[in-house]
Image 1 (cartoon, rainbow, N blue to C red):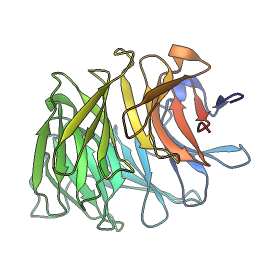
Image 2 (cartoon, rainbow, N blue to C red; image 1 turned 90 degrees about the horizontal axis):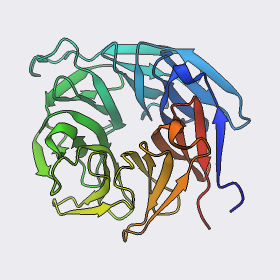
Image 3 (cartoon, rainbow, N blue to C red; image 1 turned 180 degrees about the vertical axis):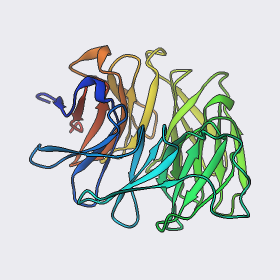
Image 4 (cartoon, helix red, strand yellow; image 1 turned 90 degrees about the vertical axis):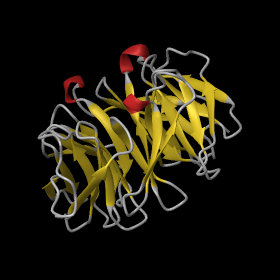
Length: 301
């Protein structure tokens, strides 16, 4: 392929592009952690930004057509319509049946739409899994392990999350029942997780330099990367039926097929790029770089 990887500047390096998602308007939306803003890149390449609360981190499209995101530093959940109207919600429970949060700074991090029409999110400092309805009502449940990080909906009607400091994968039902699956590799430190096209969940092991796969009945397979220091971070399903992930430690974007074949694409800015979030958009893969750019990776023919 000619120029399979291209980078597009969207902010100053200090702004901190981190995660990204495709919006209902067909644009690419991304968080600017240090700037306290959400950016939008249209099909014409024009970039606009919208100020929001402190530390916007992970972003996802919601069932209501808006973008929803975690505000890690203000400890709130944010919402932004595609025409730029922002609001936010305290993650403290509005449901008397939920347990009190053990931390005044719960640290919301991962967020994803659930099968119940709500958004589900992790609170890494509080050790909780939260649920927020589109009307802003929040409930939360004890997480099945320490440092719940990324979260995604599974094909079984439950939410699945990485438990970074317990080196495990967690599962939580819509009623708050949890299961934990310890990983075979010690100090795996899983971070990203996504549902794969094969009916399993795929995740990154940033500590072990591996990609993991877990079936809904708990069977785990691990695939070591050629460079175990690559520090795989975020992961997403690509339009080609493979899983794509960022290699934060060496400035690459990796690809793994469902049968375990691994390849990798270096980013133009190399190891200084520090890629974080990744998503599928316009038939390609896009990832957010610490350099203040977004990278677009063509899917191989």
